[in-house]
Length: 191
Image (tube, rainbow, N blue to C red):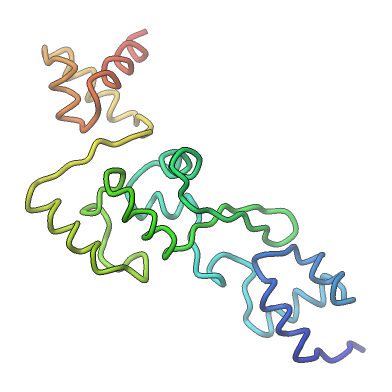
């Protein structure tokens, strides 16, 4: 027969969900991992990022329409706030709080193409984001993509454009990449 959960234990469980391994929570409460997992299911507590209102690096990249490596680069080189969380027993996620992302983006507007982000897909969305979207659309601003992986389709387009006689600079403008990036990729692809 299982021991009833106290209000303090339930509160501790809610606080630790998504931050601490289930085995650690169980050990700290003097309960089995299975018992903790069952209680979480009964209370509808997920041991994931959704419980905390955060997104993974991969999810943020999809929302922004950039490669995951781009977002990782922002974390490493441009100090985008990111938290490591352990779920279940072993999985590790790098999570970004939406509010922290927007604060960071406000100071790094040159890195984010706001017109590519759907309205209110990453809440709470500050009012200045809509102004940036409007400005980019009205002025047809296209920010250089940084740290963006090349796709197979882009490789094919690059070869086609280069073989048609365009310069690296013109190809870069057409593909929203720097001339040097285009030249390096072309030489790498053509080997």
